Image (cartoon, rainbow, N blue to C red; front, side, top):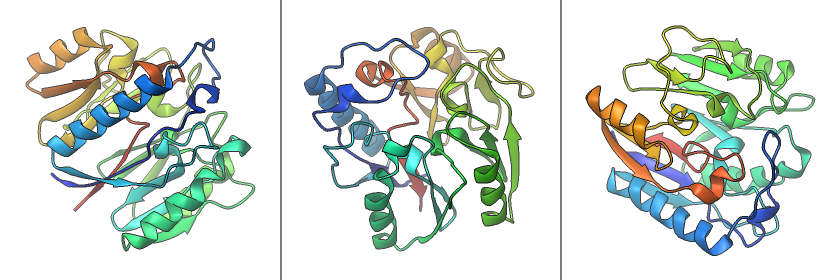
Length: 248
């Protein structure tokens, strides 16, 4: 599998990004920038061509581009983030997806939807009810994706659904059963091990902070690429947050 990867470089105000379920820690901008470059290089090495959304240095959370758009086929659903201060991030993303030739639709008020709450597994779209995504937003997504089954998911103690669970290439969930209840879940060895990006085939992208989970997944037959995203983890970020993959 290959395609494009929407990404956005961090700005110097990244340390001001929102934190909700963890204590605020210092974030090193220079290190965050270098980690982002390495993350993008890992995607490119796996066949995903980087497409950069323009920097937004006045918007600290802007590198978490996943929250602004989700892609289903050739349809881009532009979100309405639950945090009002993040909503200005969407317009520059909207311009880029139009330039890429995708059809675009929007979540409208009073709906809210963060892309980090959306987990696509085959023909099913799981959507977490969270502090950022409300029932109106989920209902609108159901109407915008009539060909797919949209399943609301209850969760607790995490920012987004994909903070608690993602999916392996065979459709198996990997995540924390304390935070979310989904069937047949593989439990990772570390919290960060719940977050995987499917790179195509048996390849997975995983945070370097989950080495025991990486070893477990390799024993299950997957090829695991790890990247250090420690500065983003200080802001409740994970490997899924920093890109939106658009298959060819």
